[in-house]
Amino acid sequence: MTRIQCFPPIESPLAKVLILGSMPGRASLQASQYYAHPRNAFWPIMGDLMGAAPNLPYEARIEILQSAGIALWDVLATCVRDGSLDAEIVEASISANDFKAFFLTHTGIADVFFNGATAEKYFHKYVRPLLEPNPLRFHRLPSTSPAHAAKTYRQKLAAWEAIFKSL
Image (tube, rainbow, N blue to C red; front, top):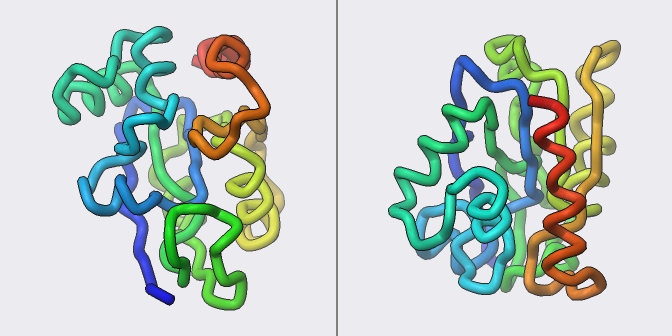
């Protein structure tokens, strides 16, 4: 088993929305980029919604998110996991990111969107009790992971359009 660590947040003083994953997968960790797996739908969805398409350089995609008021991070700071699947995370190894400090410096964020059920589960278990009371609104979106095949790309895209109602 391997202890892995998430990336720093993609953030901006303009942020109104925070998108949270659980922990980067193997391809993302190797590339040092969020959602780097070629079959992950995150960047294609961001491309269709705001022009942050996967064929653009990573830095350009990040700038598009930041200028749109979107922050990006993961719920978990570190954990033990072999492979890329959330199901392989050893729950006893979980350490969550410091969201109390994050939200104190990003006061414009009103909506938190979870990229899948695992991010939502871990946030509500390990983070939200430390934030009470809070004015944030929480929304679960279908996971963009290629492992989540229950929804088509079009269904995922339609669900992810909810982000723009919050901007």
